[in-house]
Length: 322
Image 1 (cartoon, rainbow, N blue to C red):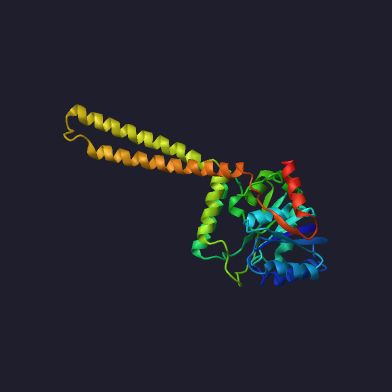
Image 2 (spheres, rainbow, N blue to C red):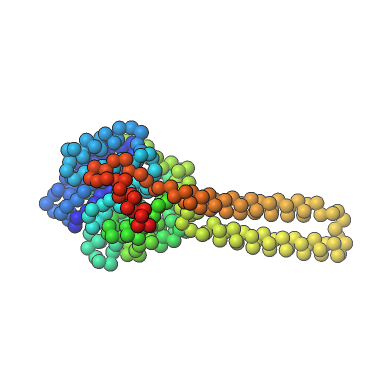
């Protein structure tokens, strides 16, 4: 196979040299399933000298290509920038923190020998995060399922897929991009592979519990109508409760058991319906806000430098095709 490996880079000056050396050893071995490869390092506005380290690796390693983005756009937007620039028929995405082992690439690529398989996810054989982080990750996967991803339970940041799948989302200009949702638009031929993963040694993950929950909420509101359906059901339940309360008040009035002018019932109804209205307005406001951002046509990424071409020209071409 000919493979493009896309690595989003953020605060990874210490791990990138180790990662690239391991990739070079694995893919340069005699028994490697890869004949040609390139590694695209997408520096996502990292505040340290990650960009300098990446450019130095590019000078020393002929297979390395560096993209530097103008600011921090987020992991999925950085991945999209690299995926759209891959040259080879198979694309692999992996993290920069050494949790994903380059030695697992052969196992990731093997299912793609089957023409019916288009996308492979590498799933950790053992849970590598703490309880709260694992709970947040499961929340993200639930939000993916709500967004229409049929294999959401098997989603991970270690992916191998046929590059031609990008034709299904190369027109996307969305600041709230989700690679996994967009891949689900293009294929249902998905396979999972259990692979060993290592714990993070250097630094801390930028995906905190709060960030993961925010990402999950962004995907649910950005790629599905589940919250709107929830508002509809909430309105139906509130209407039913209101009808029950109305019947209760009328029965009490007709039987003469109501001696006080229903202050408790009235207060309860006001609290119930005002709460439902506020929740509904909040969810609808989230959708309106996203429509506003998308109407501004904010780009999902802007490339500052592309060592193998004019990055700005390629972005413009992609947006024109949309």
